[in-house]
Image 1 (cartoon, rainbow, N blue to C red):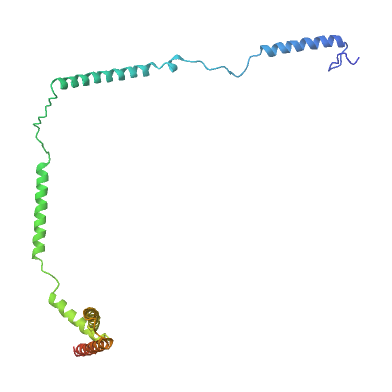
Image 2 (tube, rainbow, N blue to C red):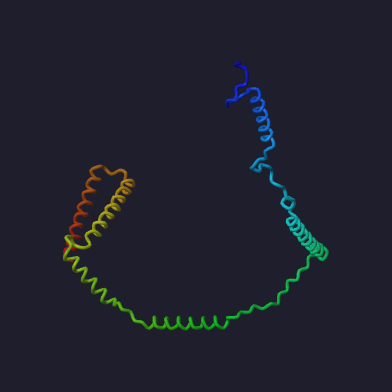
Length: 213
């Protein structure tokens, strides 16, 4: 009994119900096999004018023909030059012409006149500054500086001159010592003291001169 067909719905004869269900199932399978797809999944159709572009071929052919024609003329010219040893017609009898020449000449003449007028005004113009007044002002400033300064003017220059004089004097002493190598130490010390006294006297005299000035 457990191997017998068990229908889904209650029925009077299980054998007939099995037969009817089997027939319905077979019909359903046939319908599924014969059903057409709703979505078209086939390849799109191919068009010849898309693969074989006749217009492009024609344009390429025309371009090649123009290139061949230009090459032919160029070769013809080269052969002519080779045969005739390259004669060239370089005569040019064209004269340069200008449509606004008169206008430009008038403009240049006007600019020249303006420049001449400016130059004449500059030449006739007198100076606004007086050299005499500048000298007077400088004398006043020097007087103010001399009254304000702590040390007399010209002292710095005197000190620089003294230092230079000392350096030159030391060089001379060294040269003399090299020449007169037989001098004793005491003699050298005496010479140095004499020169130092001279320098001190010169310093005092220079300071007195500055103070008097």
